[in-house]
Length: 434
Image (cartoon, rainbow, N blue to C red):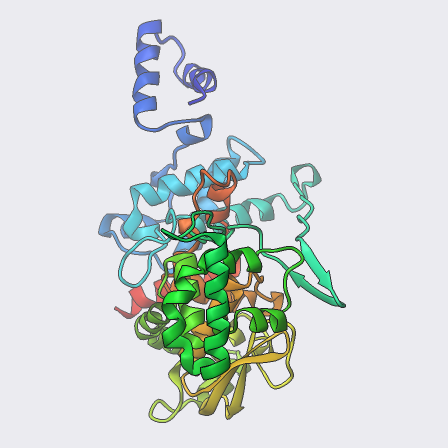
Protein backbone atom coordinates (compact mmCIF):
# COMPACT_ATOMS: atom_id res chain seq x y z
CA UNK A 1 0.00 0.00 0.00
CA UNK A 2 1.37 3.40 -1.03
CA UNK A 3 0.36 5.02 2.28
CA UNK A 4 1.76 8.50 1.58
CA UNK A 5 0.03 8.78 -1.81
CA UNK A 6 -3.32 7.63 -0.40
CA UNK A 7 -2.97 9.92 2.63
CA UNK A 8 -2.52 12.91 0.30
CA UNK A 9 -5.60 11.86 -1.72
CA UNK A 10 -7.77 11.48 1.41
CA UNK A 11 -6.55 14.75 2.91
CA UNK A 12 -7.26 16.59 -0.36
CA UNK A 13 -10.86 15.41 -0.54
CA UNK A 14 -11.51 15.44 3.22
CA UNK A 15 -9.58 18.39 4.62
CA UNK A 16 -9.66 19.04 8.34
CA UNK A 17 -9.55 15.41 9.52
CA UNK A 18 -7.77 14.87 12.81
CA UNK A 19 -4.63 12.77 12.84
CA UNK A 20 -6.46 10.00 14.73
CA UNK A 21 -9.40 9.94 12.27
CA UNK A 22 -7.09 10.03 9.26
CA UNK A 23 -5.09 7.11 10.67
CA UNK A 24 -8.29 5.11 11.20
CA UNK A 25 -9.44 5.81 7.62
CA UNK A 26 -6.10 4.65 6.23
CA UNK A 27 -6.24 1.45 8.29
CA UNK A 28 -9.75 0.65 7.04
CA UNK A 29 -8.71 1.31 3.42
CA UNK A 30 -5.76 -1.03 3.85
CA UNK A 31 -8.05 -3.76 5.19
CA UNK A 32 -10.29 -3.30 2.13
CA UNK A 33 -7.35 -3.93 -0.18
CA UNK A 34 -6.74 -0.37 -1.34
CA UNK A 35 -3.13 -0.25 -2.58
CA UNK A 36 -2.91 2.98 -4.57
CA UNK A 37 -4.71 6.21 -5.42
CA UNK A 38 -6.27 4.47 -8.44
CA UNK A 39 -8.16 2.10 -6.12
CA UNK A 40 -10.00 5.10 -4.64
CA UNK A 41 -11.65 5.98 -7.95
CA UNK A 42 -15.43 5.57 -7.80
CA UNK A 43 -18.02 5.34 -10.55
CA UNK A 44 -21.04 7.62 -10.14
CA UNK A 45 -23.85 5.22 -11.06
CA UNK A 46 -26.47 7.93 -10.58
CA UNK A 47 -25.03 9.59 -13.69
CA UNK A 48 -25.43 6.46 -15.82
CA UNK A 49 -28.07 5.95 -18.55
CA UNK A 50 -31.41 4.62 -17.30
CA UNK A 51 -30.94 1.30 -19.12
CA UNK A 52 -27.75 0.62 -17.17
CA UNK A 53 -29.35 1.50 -13.84
CA UNK A 54 -32.24 -0.88 -14.64
CA UNK A 55 -29.79 -3.66 -15.53
CA UNK A 56 -27.96 -3.18 -12.23
CA UNK A 57 -31.16 -3.28 -10.19
CA UNK A 58 -32.26 -6.47 -12.00
CA UNK A 59 -28.76 -8.02 -11.92
CA UNK A 60 -29.02 -8.53 -15.68
CA UNK A 61 -26.42 -8.15 -18.41
CA UNK A 62 -26.94 -4.93 -20.38
CA UNK A 63 -27.21 -5.08 -24.15
CA UNK A 64 -23.98 -4.43 -26.12
CA UNK A 65 -25.26 -0.96 -27.04
CA UNK A 66 -26.10 -0.07 -23.44
CA UNK A 67 -22.73 -1.38 -22.32
CA UNK A 68 -20.99 0.93 -24.80
CA UNK A 69 -23.00 3.86 -23.44
CA UNK A 70 -21.85 2.92 -19.93
CA UNK A 71 -18.21 2.78 -21.04
CA UNK A 72 -18.54 6.26 -22.56
CA UNK A 73 -20.02 7.58 -19.30
CA UNK A 74 -17.32 5.91 -17.19
CA UNK A 75 -14.51 7.36 -19.32
CA UNK A 76 -16.13 10.82 -19.26
CA UNK A 77 -16.09 10.64 -15.44
CA UNK A 78 -12.45 9.54 -15.48
CA UNK A 79 -11.48 12.49 -17.69
CA UNK A 80 -12.91 14.87 -15.12
CA UNK A 81 -9.95 13.91 -12.92
CA UNK A 82 -7.26 12.81 -15.38
CA UNK A 83 -7.02 13.54 -19.12
CA UNK A 84 -4.63 10.64 -19.70
CA UNK A 85 -5.53 7.78 -17.31
CA UNK A 86 -3.01 4.98 -17.28
CA UNK A 87 -3.81 1.35 -17.96
CA UNK A 88 -3.44 0.70 -14.23
CA UNK A 89 -6.19 3.22 -13.47
CA UNK A 90 -8.41 1.78 -16.21
CA UNK A 91 -7.83 -1.70 -14.80
CA UNK A 92 -8.67 -0.57 -11.29
CA UNK A 93 -11.95 0.97 -12.50
CA UNK A 94 -12.89 -2.10 -14.56
CA UNK A 95 -12.03 -4.42 -11.67
CA UNK A 96 -14.14 -2.42 -9.23
CA UNK A 97 -17.14 -2.45 -11.62
CA UNK A 98 -16.91 -6.22 -12.06
CA UNK A 99 -16.39 -6.75 -8.33
CA UNK A 100 -19.53 -4.75 -7.51
CA UNK A 101 -21.69 -6.13 -10.35
CA UNK A 102 -20.28 -9.49 -11.51
CA UNK A 103 -23.59 -10.74 -12.91
CA UNK A 104 -23.82 -7.69 -15.15
CA UNK A 105 -20.28 -7.22 -16.41
CA UNK A 106 -17.94 -10.15 -15.60
CA UNK A 107 -16.37 -12.22 -18.39
CA UNK A 108 -17.93 -15.63 -17.84
CA UNK A 109 -18.18 -18.91 -19.68
CA UNK A 110 -21.42 -20.74 -20.38
CA UNK A 111 -21.41 -22.56 -17.05
CA UNK A 112 -20.90 -19.32 -15.14
CA UNK A 113 -17.23 -19.65 -14.20
CA UNK A 114 -15.31 -16.38 -14.50
CA UNK A 115 -12.58 -16.01 -17.15
CA UNK A 116 -9.36 -14.71 -15.58
CA UNK A 117 -10.09 -11.77 -13.29
CA UNK A 118 -13.40 -11.26 -15.08
CA UNK A 119 -12.74 -7.72 -16.30
CA UNK A 120 -10.49 -8.08 -19.36
CA UNK A 121 -13.12 -7.29 -22.00
CA UNK A 122 -14.39 -4.30 -20.00
CA UNK A 123 -10.82 -3.08 -19.52
CA UNK A 124 -10.26 -3.32 -23.28
CA UNK A 125 -13.39 -1.26 -23.95
CA UNK A 126 -12.45 1.41 -21.41
CA UNK A 127 -8.86 1.65 -22.67
CA UNK A 128 -10.03 1.82 -26.29
CA UNK A 129 -12.42 4.66 -25.41
CA UNK A 130 -9.62 6.53 -23.59
CA UNK A 131 -7.35 6.19 -26.63
CA UNK A 132 -10.17 7.39 -28.91
CA UNK A 133 -10.78 10.51 -26.82
CA UNK A 134 -7.04 11.20 -26.85
CA UNK A 135 -6.63 10.51 -30.59
CA UNK A 136 -5.69 14.15 -31.29
CA UNK A 137 -3.58 14.53 -28.17
CA UNK A 138 -0.05 13.54 -29.21
CA UNK A 139 1.31 14.06 -25.69
CA UNK A 140 -1.01 11.39 -24.35
CA UNK A 141 0.17 8.63 -26.65
CA UNK A 142 2.42 5.88 -25.39
CA UNK A 143 4.20 3.58 -27.79
CA UNK A 144 6.41 0.62 -27.10
CA UNK A 145 8.64 -1.33 -29.42
CA UNK A 146 7.66 -4.94 -29.83
CA UNK A 147 10.01 -7.33 -28.11
CA UNK A 148 11.90 -9.51 -30.53
CA UNK A 149 11.37 -13.23 -30.37
CA UNK A 150 14.25 -15.66 -30.22
CA UNK A 151 14.48 -17.44 -33.55
CA UNK A 152 16.50 -20.49 -34.43
CA UNK A 153 17.99 -20.57 -37.92
CA UNK A 154 19.22 -23.89 -39.23
CA UNK A 155 19.69 -24.92 -42.83
CA UNK A 156 17.65 -21.97 -44.07
CA UNK A 157 14.85 -22.90 -41.67
CA UNK A 158 13.61 -20.21 -39.28
CA UNK A 159 11.41 -21.35 -36.42
CA UNK A 160 10.36 -19.00 -33.62
CA UNK A 161 10.68 -20.51 -30.17
CA UNK A 162 8.09 -19.62 -27.58
CA UNK A 163 9.46 -17.90 -24.43
CA UNK A 164 10.20 -20.35 -21.68
CA UNK A 165 7.08 -21.37 -19.73
CA UNK A 166 5.06 -18.49 -21.20
CA UNK A 167 1.99 -20.69 -21.55
CA UNK A 168 2.22 -22.17 -18.09
CA UNK A 169 3.72 -25.59 -18.82
CA UNK A 170 4.11 -27.24 -15.43
CA UNK A 171 7.00 -29.53 -16.48
CA UNK A 172 8.75 -27.60 -19.22
CA UNK A 173 12.26 -28.35 -18.00
CA UNK A 174 12.15 -31.01 -15.26
CA UNK A 175 15.31 -31.69 -13.28
CA UNK A 176 14.34 -34.55 -10.95
CA UNK A 177 15.18 -38.04 -12.23
CA UNK A 178 12.67 -40.88 -11.81
CA UNK A 179 13.21 -42.95 -8.68
CA UNK A 180 16.04 -45.46 -9.06
CA UNK A 181 17.17 -44.08 -12.44
CA UNK A 182 20.33 -42.32 -13.63
CA UNK A 183 21.01 -40.51 -16.88
CA UNK A 184 22.83 -43.61 -18.11
CA UNK A 185 19.88 -45.93 -17.43
CA UNK A 186 17.46 -43.48 -19.05
CA UNK A 187 19.50 -43.49 -22.25
CA UNK A 188 19.49 -47.29 -22.15
CA UNK A 189 15.69 -47.14 -21.99
CA UNK A 190 15.77 -44.78 -24.98
CA UNK A 191 17.59 -47.48 -26.95
CA UNK A 192 14.86 -49.96 -25.95
CA UNK A 193 12.25 -47.57 -27.31
CA UNK A 194 14.06 -47.33 -30.65
CA UNK A 195 14.22 -51.13 -30.83
CA UNK A 196 10.48 -51.41 -30.11
CA UNK A 197 9.75 -48.93 -32.89
CA UNK A 198 11.99 -50.72 -35.38
CA UNK A 199 10.12 -53.98 -34.67
CA UNK A 200 6.50 -52.76 -34.31
CA UNK A 201 6.41 -49.21 -35.70
CA UNK A 202 3.74 -46.94 -34.19
CA UNK A 203 1.82 -50.10 -33.31
CA UNK A 204 4.20 -50.43 -30.37
CA UNK A 205 3.02 -47.15 -28.81
CA UNK A 206 1.05 -48.89 -26.05
CA UNK A 207 4.04 -51.02 -25.11
CA UNK A 208 6.26 -47.94 -25.12
CA UNK A 209 3.96 -45.69 -23.06
CA UNK A 210 5.44 -46.44 -19.61
CA UNK A 211 9.01 -46.15 -20.96
CA UNK A 212 8.18 -42.83 -22.64
CA UNK A 213 6.88 -41.46 -19.35
CA UNK A 214 10.03 -42.60 -17.55
CA UNK A 215 12.31 -40.89 -20.10
CA UNK A 216 10.30 -37.65 -20.17
CA UNK A 217 13.13 -35.65 -18.56
CA UNK A 218 15.63 -36.42 -21.35
CA UNK A 219 12.94 -35.85 -23.99
CA UNK A 220 12.48 -32.29 -22.67
CA UNK A 221 16.23 -31.72 -22.55
CA UNK A 222 16.44 -32.70 -26.20
CA UNK A 223 13.40 -30.69 -27.32
CA UNK A 224 14.50 -27.58 -25.39
CA UNK A 225 18.04 -27.60 -26.78
CA UNK A 226 19.31 -24.65 -28.84
CA UNK A 227 19.47 -24.75 -31.79
CA UNK A 228 16.14 -26.55 -31.87
CA UNK A 229 16.25 -29.99 -33.49
CA UNK A 230 14.44 -30.37 -36.81
CA UNK A 231 11.31 -32.50 -36.88
CA UNK A 232 13.00 -35.18 -39.01
CA UNK A 233 15.68 -35.45 -36.31
CA UNK A 234 13.08 -35.69 -33.52
CA UNK A 235 11.26 -38.42 -35.48
CA UNK A 236 14.49 -40.39 -35.65
CA UNK A 237 15.47 -39.88 -31.99
CA UNK A 238 12.00 -40.15 -30.40
CA UNK A 239 9.66 -41.75 -32.96
CA UNK A 240 6.88 -42.48 -30.44
CA UNK A 241 6.46 -38.74 -29.84
CA UNK A 242 4.61 -38.74 -33.16
CA UNK A 243 2.20 -41.50 -32.33
CA UNK A 244 -1.19 -40.30 -31.16
CA UNK A 245 -0.75 -41.94 -27.77
CA UNK A 246 2.79 -40.57 -27.35
CA UNK A 247 1.88 -37.02 -28.41
CA UNK A 248 -1.09 -36.80 -26.03
CA UNK A 249 0.84 -38.39 -23.15
CA UNK A 250 3.76 -35.96 -23.53
CA UNK A 251 1.37 -33.02 -23.64
CA UNK A 252 -0.38 -34.33 -20.52
CA UNK A 253 2.91 -34.50 -18.61
CA UNK A 254 3.90 -31.07 -19.92
CA UNK A 255 0.68 -29.25 -18.99
CA UNK A 256 -1.46 -31.51 -16.75
CA UNK A 257 -4.23 -31.17 -19.36
CA UNK A 258 -6.13 -33.98 -21.08
CA UNK A 259 -6.38 -32.17 -24.39
CA UNK A 260 -8.72 -34.47 -26.33
CA UNK A 261 -11.23 -34.56 -23.46
CA UNK A 262 -11.15 -30.75 -23.17
CA UNK A 263 -11.71 -30.25 -26.90
CA UNK A 264 -14.66 -32.65 -26.90
CA UNK A 265 -16.19 -30.88 -23.90
CA UNK A 266 -15.71 -27.51 -25.60
CA UNK A 267 -17.37 -28.71 -28.82
CA UNK A 268 -20.31 -30.11 -26.87
CA UNK A 269 -20.79 -26.96 -24.76
CA UNK A 270 -19.93 -24.17 -27.19
CA UNK A 271 -20.05 -25.57 -30.74
CA UNK A 272 -23.79 -25.10 -31.26
CA UNK A 273 -23.66 -21.61 -29.74
CA UNK A 274 -20.93 -20.55 -32.19
CA UNK A 275 -22.96 -21.88 -35.13
CA UNK A 276 -26.15 -20.13 -33.97
CA UNK A 277 -24.23 -16.89 -33.31
CA UNK A 278 -22.77 -16.94 -36.83
CA UNK A 279 -26.22 -17.58 -38.30
CA UNK A 280 -27.30 -14.23 -36.82
CA UNK A 281 -24.46 -12.30 -38.45
CA UNK A 282 -25.16 -10.21 -41.53
CA UNK A 283 -22.94 -8.98 -44.37
CA UNK A 284 -20.41 -11.76 -43.91
CA UNK A 285 -20.37 -13.76 -47.19
CA UNK A 286 -17.60 -16.19 -46.15
CA UNK A 287 -19.54 -17.27 -43.06
CA UNK A 288 -22.74 -17.50 -45.10
CA UNK A 289 -21.01 -19.83 -47.59
CA UNK A 290 -19.76 -22.09 -44.79
CA UNK A 291 -23.20 -22.29 -43.19
CA UNK A 292 -24.80 -22.99 -46.59
CA UNK A 293 -22.54 -26.05 -46.97
CA UNK A 294 -23.14 -27.27 -43.41
CA UNK A 295 -25.65 -30.13 -43.10
CA UNK A 296 -26.10 -31.16 -39.43
CA UNK A 297 -26.99 -34.74 -40.38
CA UNK A 298 -23.93 -35.42 -42.56
CA UNK A 299 -21.34 -32.65 -42.02
CA UNK A 300 -18.56 -32.69 -39.45
CA UNK A 301 -19.63 -30.22 -36.74
CA UNK A 302 -16.07 -29.69 -35.47
CA UNK A 303 -14.86 -28.85 -38.99
CA UNK A 304 -17.72 -26.38 -39.41
CA UNK A 305 -16.93 -24.64 -36.11
CA UNK A 306 -13.23 -24.42 -36.99
CA UNK A 307 -14.02 -22.90 -40.41
CA UNK A 308 -16.48 -20.42 -38.85
CA UNK A 309 -13.89 -19.25 -36.30
CA UNK A 310 -11.27 -18.68 -38.98
CA UNK A 311 -13.80 -16.82 -41.15
CA UNK A 312 -14.90 -14.63 -38.22
CA UNK A 313 -11.31 -13.70 -37.36
CA UNK A 314 -10.57 -13.18 -41.10
CA UNK A 315 -7.78 -15.76 -41.00
CA UNK A 316 -7.06 -17.93 -44.06
CA UNK A 317 -8.21 -21.51 -43.59
CA UNK A 318 -5.01 -22.66 -45.32
CA UNK A 319 -3.02 -21.57 -42.26
CA UNK A 320 -4.40 -24.58 -40.35
CA UNK A 321 -5.87 -26.84 -43.06
CA UNK A 322 -4.01 -27.05 -46.35
CA UNK A 323 -2.88 -29.08 -49.31
CA UNK A 324 0.45 -27.24 -49.68
CA UNK A 325 2.63 -27.97 -46.67
CA UNK A 326 3.99 -24.99 -44.65
CA UNK A 327 6.79 -25.23 -42.09
CA UNK A 328 4.43 -24.70 -39.13
CA UNK A 329 2.20 -27.49 -37.79
CA UNK A 330 -0.98 -27.85 -39.85
CA UNK A 331 -3.77 -30.29 -40.72
CA UNK A 332 -4.02 -31.89 -44.14
CA UNK A 333 -7.55 -32.70 -45.21
CA UNK A 334 -8.45 -35.45 -47.65
CA UNK A 335 -11.79 -34.84 -49.33
CA UNK A 336 -14.34 -32.08 -48.74
CA UNK A 337 -13.61 -29.82 -45.75
CA UNK A 338 -17.15 -30.19 -44.36
CA UNK A 339 -17.23 -33.98 -44.90
CA UNK A 340 -13.58 -35.07 -44.94
CA UNK A 341 -12.52 -38.65 -45.57
CA UNK A 342 -9.49 -38.31 -43.30
CA UNK A 343 -7.02 -35.92 -41.65
CA UNK A 344 -3.24 -35.93 -41.32
CA UNK A 345 -0.84 -33.84 -39.24
CA UNK A 346 2.16 -32.16 -40.89
CA UNK A 347 5.08 -30.42 -39.15
CA UNK A 348 7.92 -28.78 -41.06
CA UNK A 349 6.52 -30.22 -44.31
CA UNK A 350 6.68 -33.75 -42.93
CA UNK A 351 3.52 -35.82 -42.49
CA UNK A 352 4.04 -37.11 -38.97
CA UNK A 353 0.63 -38.60 -38.14
CA UNK A 354 -2.42 -40.00 -39.88
CA UNK A 355 -4.52 -40.53 -41.77
CA UNK A 356 -7.35 -40.50 -39.18
CA UNK A 357 -11.02 -39.73 -39.68
CA UNK A 358 -11.63 -37.77 -36.44
CA UNK A 359 -10.86 -34.05 -36.73
CA UNK A 360 -10.92 -33.53 -32.95
CA UNK A 361 -8.11 -36.04 -32.47
CA UNK A 362 -6.12 -34.23 -35.20
CA UNK A 363 -6.87 -30.84 -33.67
CA UNK A 364 -5.71 -32.14 -30.29
CA UNK A 365 -2.52 -33.39 -31.94
CA UNK A 366 -2.04 -30.01 -33.61
CA UNK A 367 -2.21 -28.18 -30.27
CA UNK A 368 0.00 -30.73 -28.56
CA UNK A 369 2.67 -30.35 -31.25
CA UNK A 370 2.93 -26.58 -30.67
CA UNK A 371 3.48 -27.08 -26.95
CA UNK A 372 5.59 -30.22 -27.08
CA UNK A 373 7.99 -28.81 -29.68
CA UNK A 374 8.13 -25.21 -28.31
CA UNK A 375 6.60 -23.65 -31.42
CA UNK A 376 4.61 -20.42 -31.59
CA UNK A 377 1.19 -20.24 -33.19
CA UNK A 378 1.46 -18.97 -36.79
CA UNK A 379 0.44 -15.32 -36.96
CA UNK A 380 -2.27 -15.86 -39.60
CA UNK A 381 -4.18 -18.35 -37.43
CA UNK A 382 -3.29 -17.07 -33.95
CA UNK A 383 -6.77 -15.75 -33.07
CA UNK A 384 -8.51 -19.02 -33.92
CA UNK A 385 -5.97 -21.13 -32.05
CA UNK A 386 -5.94 -18.81 -29.02
CA UNK A 387 -9.74 -18.80 -28.84
CA UNK A 388 -9.85 -22.61 -28.90
CA UNK A 389 -7.05 -22.79 -26.32
CA UNK A 390 -8.60 -20.34 -23.88
CA UNK A 391 -12.23 -21.35 -24.20
CA UNK A 392 -11.70 -25.09 -24.31
CA UNK A 393 -10.89 -24.71 -20.58
CA UNK A 394 -7.25 -25.72 -21.13
CA UNK A 395 -6.35 -23.13 -18.47
CA UNK A 396 -2.72 -23.65 -19.41
CA UNK A 397 -1.79 -19.99 -19.00
CA UNK A 398 -3.20 -19.99 -15.44
CA UNK A 399 -0.78 -22.71 -14.39
CA UNK A 400 2.32 -20.51 -14.75
CA UNK A 401 4.21 -20.32 -11.46
CA UNK A 402 4.86 -16.63 -10.82
CA UNK A 403 7.72 -17.53 -8.48
CA UNK A 404 9.60 -18.80 -11.55
CA UNK A 405 8.78 -15.84 -13.76
CA UNK A 406 8.25 -12.27 -12.50
CA UNK A 407 6.22 -11.47 -15.64
CA UNK A 408 3.76 -14.30 -15.03
CA UNK A 409 0.94 -12.10 -13.73
CA UNK A 410 1.15 -9.80 -16.71
CA UNK A 411 1.25 -12.70 -19.14
CA UNK A 412 -1.81 -14.37 -17.67
CA UNK A 413 -3.97 -11.35 -18.45
CA UNK A 414 -2.61 -10.77 -21.95
CA UNK A 415 -5.64 -11.92 -23.95
CA UNK A 416 -5.85 -11.10 -27.65
CA UNK A 417 -8.43 -8.25 -27.91
CA UNK A 418 -10.16 -9.89 -30.91
CA UNK A 419 -10.54 -13.12 -28.93
CA UNK A 420 -11.78 -11.19 -25.90
CA UNK A 421 -14.36 -9.28 -27.97
CA UNK A 422 -15.66 -12.43 -29.66
CA UNK A 423 -15.92 -14.18 -26.30
CA UNK A 424 -17.90 -11.27 -24.85
CA UNK A 425 -20.26 -11.27 -27.83
CA UNK A 426 -20.84 -15.00 -27.39
CA UNK A 427 -21.65 -14.51 -23.69
CA UNK A 428 -24.08 -11.70 -24.52
CA UNK A 429 -25.66 -13.84 -27.26
CA UNK A 430 -26.16 -16.75 -24.82
CA UNK A 431 -27.71 -14.48 -22.19
CA UNK A 432 -30.12 -12.97 -24.68
CA UNK A 433 -31.02 -16.40 -26.11
CA UNK A 434 -31.82 -17.73 -22.63
